[in-house]
Length: 351
Image (tube, rainbow, N blue to C red):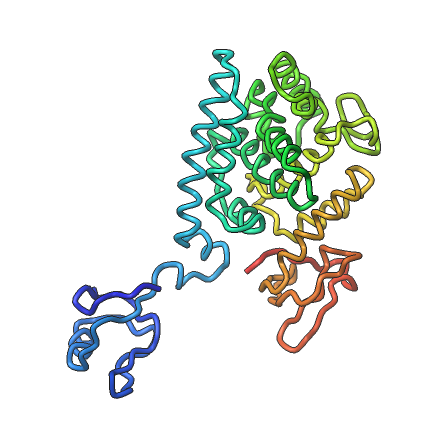
């Protein structure tokens, strides 16, 4: 809501809260539509200023409320400006062979990070961004750098390691910029030929960075971020101890970043759906200790949220089940539901 002087009121505005005179007489109720008669009435009662609803006050979903908030609009503007700067530096490297200065990349991270008060708030802002179709791969990498820094803080990395992980996010998927967007962002399932072609982005990225003056872990991330601890990944089918630890971190970041990106075939997944997907994939694919720490943080960040279940029921998140983080205990009206006991029911949206 915003305060508006009586002289600046316009017909069609909506009163944000009950208006009382100095004698405690109710002059206008909340949600009253302003017209000429109401403005005259306010004048008779010497009301100088009233609260008026803004678009964000009249939205229904949390998604709409966040998107219309002034804090998100500021974040989006800063994000877009820094995305342009990042894209310019990467393109200059790809086409003119100009080395990318890591200090500048870290400054881009800080510019965006400083728009939010906490790591949880930053993830929430990223969740509500709408990716531009011309910048999908660049935005995905920028998001990975931001997410990686948050996750790295959660798992208590040192300051130097935190910088390395952030830079891994900026660089790890650079090989995709050597492949066509219609392949990388195809909404339908890839053919076997397309999938094998797409997998070459790891080696393409490594070839781009191998002679650059960068930390070896950053170079390794381009090649190894699709390796999995159980040996099911690519390109080398390495197992846990054979994979650079930063590549294991980025594997988690990459999967999370992909799930918050809205795609043609689906919208962004809810935080609990994302946690559920990791649980379904099995912890053996990732660094189990690290992944469980991150998922626990993600789950507890949703405590108290108003949510919609997959059957349409609305409820509030009461308690997190630590042995099934994606299925908390929720309360709908007077009914308490332990989602762990209902495997076919999930939280489909945060309201």
